[in-house]
Amino acid sequence: MKSVTLNAFPRSLGRRAGAKKLRATGRIPAVIYGGKGNKAQSLEVSAKEFEDLIHHSVSENLLLDLVVKDDARPKRLALLQEVQHHPLSQGVVHVDFHEVSETEKVTIMVPVETVGEAAGVKNAGGVLEHVLFKLKVRALPKDLPEQIIIDVAHLELNRSVHIGEVKAPEGVEIIGDKHIPVVSVKPPRAEEEVAVAEAVPAAGDVEMIKEKKEGEEGAAPAGKAGAAPAKGAEKGAAKGAEKAPAAADKGAEKKAEKPVEKKK
Image (tube, rainbow, N blue to C red; front, side, top):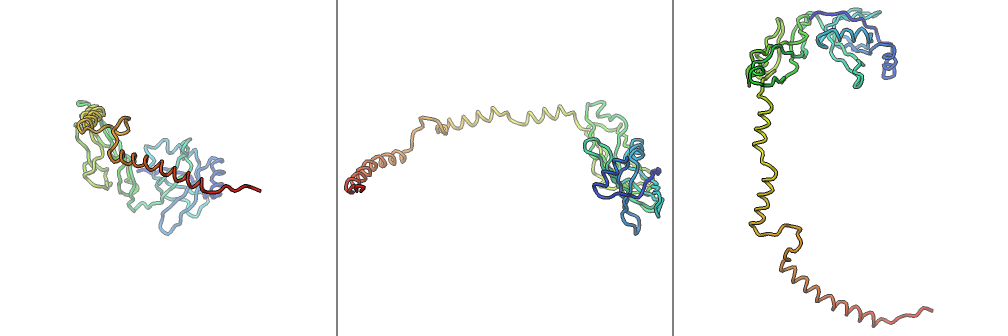
């Protein structure tokens, strides 16, 4: 990966309020991490210069020669580690850099791109699916690729390219389980949907079976008027009806025996 120059400045304003004021002046707050024995340092970069750099690059994997004005260490080699975007405007609101050494290997995630038209798509109407959109690679900073290209022209239906089959650029090691697919050619979606529809029974069939079982058992459907009451319920109701008048008579007798007190 070829390094590109980016101008930076030690950050003059800190915290949230300071970051807002900084963005209002056309600069982006940034932090650089890493480096032997060096603490994280707050920086700021020109919003226009940085966004132009991103727009003209293949991906956000960039190797940068950071030129920090008026700093004890004015030049540093760094990887672009993370770019934070505003959720609505998509403008860059914060940037993280990771300082690296030219002589030490680093590990990063690299985006995967495909070239060519898969034979299974062209001849059998299949669908090309990306299983992995990024691959983990390890290399010296100068050897790091911006992206990994996979030629899929030879892929037939139900075939895949696995991690172990991806050709890495010179000096680059691809890390991961070699049996995991990266891209695959799947059967047409219409055939899959038809197969699923045939395997699932219709809702009407389920209802008919349920009603038939109820009819065979001779049980009246729950909650319907006219269902025959249980024998125990009839006896209980009859006993209750017999006890009710007797209780009423006893209450009336007690009321009659109690003398009525006149108010003075």
